[in-house]
Structures are given as structure tokens and as C-alpha cells.
Image (cartoon, rainbow, N blue to C red; front, side, top):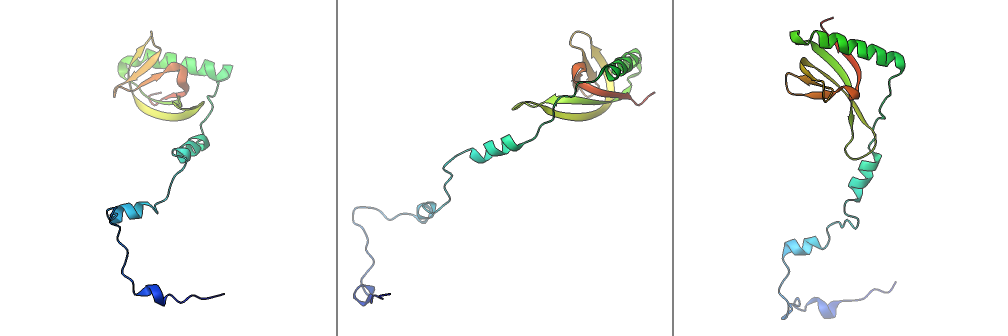
Length: 137
């Protein structure tokens, strides 16, 4: 490889443009910062990879047992029973959802909406319930 000797330019003063102002250190650093050509791509990949559960459809036996448990709980609603509910929460962005468990004191039942209303204001639709237990049995 042929090496050059830069002795002819080493002693020259640094060039300063008369037409353009000096770039700030912040702007100079920004030239070398990482560039995301596909803005939002990482979030889209993460959303696609996020898993959801399918809604479980109870068989006849489970449905009958659930109906019986609901009737028993509604008969004792005046005593504010404490119940544990396993229910389905649909995902807002994609098909499926997740199952959550909630324990609380039942305050009321809306016949029109078919919704359990708990003392803390939480509402759970009967159609979303997969399992139901009363702790006062």
C-alpha cells in the first residue's frame, strides 16, 4: 500500500465557511443518531406477536351448573354474597381476549343487561362468565 505524506496540508488552518453558520454540537450529533426507516414497525411486530386466548364455549353440563349457581346466588343477593368469577375480557385490538378472575361482594343484578354489579362498581356480563363460585356456600 502506498502511504501519503500529508506534510503539505498538516499546518494549514481549519477551513471556516463564510456562507454557512457553524453547526451546533447537537445538530452534528443528530446526523449520526440511529434512524428508524419504518416508524411504528417494532410496535406492529410486538402487537402481532402478542397472544390472546380464545373464548371457551361451555358444554351443556357446565352451562347447566353455571345456571344453577347463578340462580342460587341471585336468591341470596340480599345478603351481599361474596363470589369469585372467572370471566372473558375481549381484546380491543385483535380477535380473542383473556380470562380474568375477580372476587367481590355482589350488590345487584341487572335483568335488562344481564350484568352482575359489585359493591366497588365493577360490572361483569353473565355471557362472559365461564366459572362462578360463591364463598358463602
